[in-house]
Length: 115
Length: 115
Image (cartoon, rainbow over all chains, first blue to last red; front, side):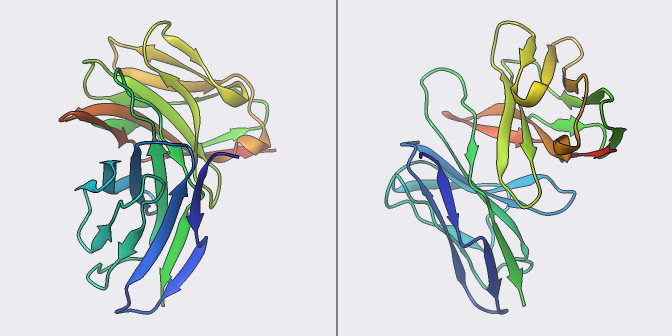
């Protein structure tokens, strides 16, 4: 079945360590996104990519990095520079159409906890 | 820039009662509107969308929403809720960002359906 796969579902990290969250899609979508979700704060955009080998910062990119070497994959690295990384991370993708927007399709999320 | 306001952070309701979750947005220029649902520890799932045409939009699980341009609103309704509708609901607006579009999110409304 087509969809977006995030792994792992739960992740624990020690302070000072970098960690990479995986996001893979087989929907043949051009655009991919990373969001961070904290209680009561909705979804905040970290990074997005509209095409392979290109990506843009979102609203809260500091302390995060991404790559887009393949259309199917958009991994997110949470670096030690991110001061408060404990959160629920959501990956999404959407097709690119010439006219009008399209909805985003979401993965199941990764819950990162710093211990 | 667009903004989205979900007027209620929490909505408690009894099973089989009607419910309305309110959403207002800031600009009426070429807006595209979405409602998503998120069950605990899961990703977001599209409920319904308004792109153009009829202002009354029907979605999955018996939900519907009405686009009101004059009031810049896109309220979500269901005539009779079930326990299984307990979830977080997010309203989103598609905004043009350069040659691309991005989704602007409300902070969410937590719907609690009680027996």
